Length: 130
Image (cartoon, rainbow, N blue to C red; front, side, top):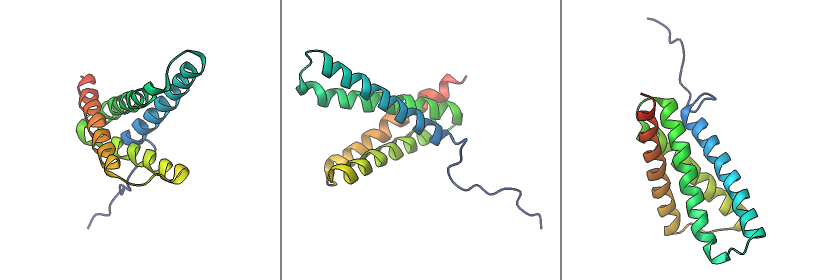
């Protein structure tokens, strides 16, 4: 019997999902700082803030999906979608722990939309490799 040379143990440092998640969170942080500066120093109304939050999350998830799919090289929808699920889990966890935000139907919608945005970015990222 031949012994196993290595055992896969989930997410590794070189994992496409982890790399895409880090890029996605970095994009979200940078875009949030820029949006905060725009709201602080311009006459932008706070009523548009919800729209800008959705745009920031969508673009961050899409970019993270692109990176994930490109690094994975295959199954971009799967890896990008998993990155989106992890991203939304982090956002929901931060909201729950810091603002005591309850789990609602909108949490499930966020999860599904995050999966979709990450999966779309992952599919395009795989095809950008060629």
